[in-house]
Length: 232
Image (tube, rainbow, N blue to C red):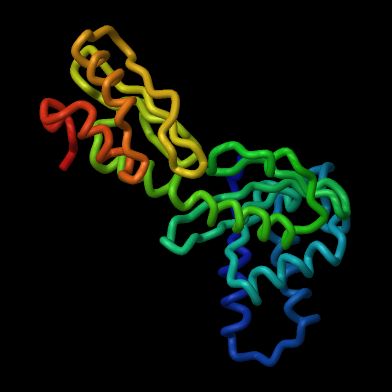
């Protein structure tokens, strides 16, 4: 849990725009001072437990790649904010354990094997998740269209981490639909009993058009009677 975050990106930007001539060593000193003054430590973690290479990686990501980085309650808890081509923000929370040993705490993305890996550096994590996010483009697009045009009953506050949606058909029936990482609908079934909707779903699955997006297919399968529940 990141209850007390320090925006390293903003701190470094302010320092660089201060008008002072500064070397790489000056920037590292400022970064270290900022960390020491903002991170609350008890007997657990102190700054000397972070290796200089790790701090150098943080500096490079902020200054050279323009990536916002935040520290949590300890300096071993870090949030990296990755922004995709559509300006969506994706949070990757990491835990520094030891030199060359960094793990993923959580992400605001659907679960993937990347979360189970150990990494040797922050740039390695950034590269892996940037590629992963690029590959999820269709997934993001499909979920955004469902959230925009359909009445979503669950999750109550849908995010990209949730790879399913339960869509209102009528007051007694929902359509459960899951979205694969490549943006394909799967595991569609009804929540509730309805001969009408069940018949339409069974027929519609046989004629599902993968060249159309999920919302278009839902409208085709369930017909005009569904239009009253669509948030146009």
